[in-house]
Image 1 (cartoon, helix red, strand yellow):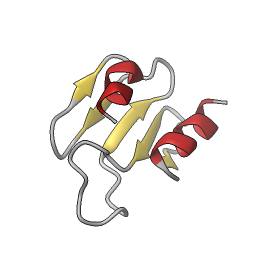
Image 2 (cartoon, one colour):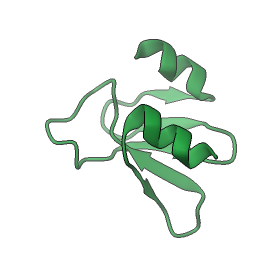
Image 3 (spheres, helix red, strand yellow):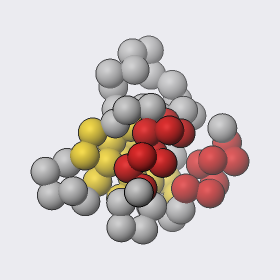
Length: 67
């Protein structure tokens, strides 16, 4: 299950109502509070975007390399 994988890597996140996007804490910009979940992962194809630092990727591979 993708959601369990996201939780194990990024910590507990939030799934939107349409179950299309998953919001997690961004490990790149590391906001001061972990409640700010600004990294959005599209569940369908794992494309991600952080609204704080502007990081974008078409898959989680490049994000996981930065961890």
